Image (cartoon, rainbow over all chains, first blue to last red; front, side, top):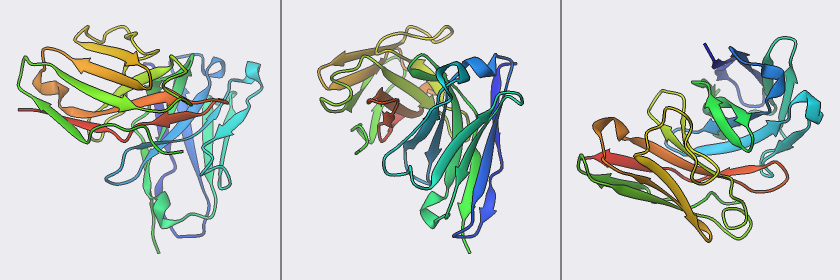
Length: 119
Length: 110
């Protein structure tokens, strides 16, 4: 089955760091760029950032408002993409999704992992 | 950069058509034909409905149609069905491998 599964969410304290994982299966993971997107409670989708496929250099790009605390990486040997979030804030509370790219479109999404930032 | 502008909600009766607008700027929607629409049911993965303005992935019925004029993209759902009740988001490529989502529109089937 072609799917993406996010993991690593949970309750975290403000100021801590967190690494989320996105595991892909059923498709050639290394050939696809990936994005991370989040949805805060009661809010819309917010694009966080992108990592290109390795043939394109695994380059990363981020939303201007978020780039300082967020880092995206990938390990194609494990079919996994990662999102590192540093200096967690309450406003980082959200469901975090990863999405596979086909061309300029995010064509396949996971079901998300919930991150709650609270003391 | 601010989110693309979508109406908060639209509604229609079964069988009717509804259209959701998505207004951007000359930095995004107006200059790139990379607008996609997603259907999002609560607690589920968002689903791609249309991409590259007016293309549909396999398996998406032709009741869903995307279009664009200037800085505004639109999604029209024809023959509204109960299962169409969901949140819908537009998304546009901006530049430099960055993307921007709309604020989302809740479609209610009356």
